Image (cartoon, rainbow, N blue to C red; front, top):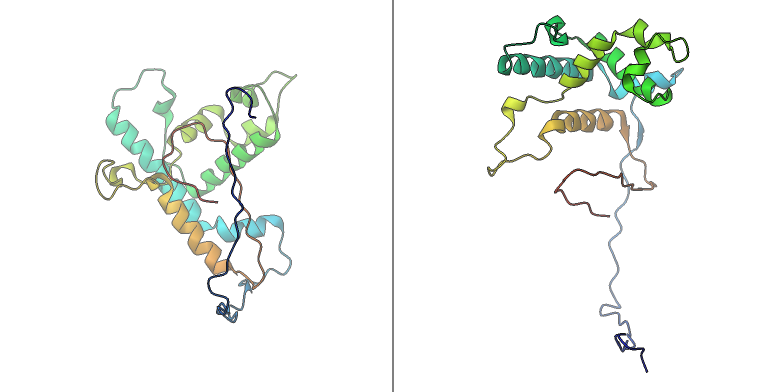
Length: 207
């Protein structure tokens, strides 16, 4: 007798029946010739990274970041007399490399606030950050950091809406460089992972 408030569910025995006992799945012979497509003799870690974050990638980031800044100044022609954006100048691939380096370095050196990385307080002073880039320049690049042209984004209420427009060029770049650098071998293990994301994102995820 189930307890008060409980739902009495009868679970029927299920018998699985093979409806096609003579079915034999077709086996396809592997002919991919998988492996690395570049000579990695003497490679260091940074050399592998450069296979994917190549010159084309850095040109893309520099171009779109500068474009985003130009669009900002067009929309906001009047800047305050003390605005740090008055000192803006167009970026380039070499500077964007330094900018990404600092982002990675911040992940290794933990401080309570990002401005502390440029602090001159001897108790928390880390000279590498100021030596690579000044704080105002880093702040401006962080604001304008971009991978695509906002003016070419399809209308969000139109039939050609691209939910991944912000990173579309990035995805296409990595798809090309990954395919160019490596072809999977016959035996591979595909794993998946999920990251906590608190903003709204309507794309479906299938596992």
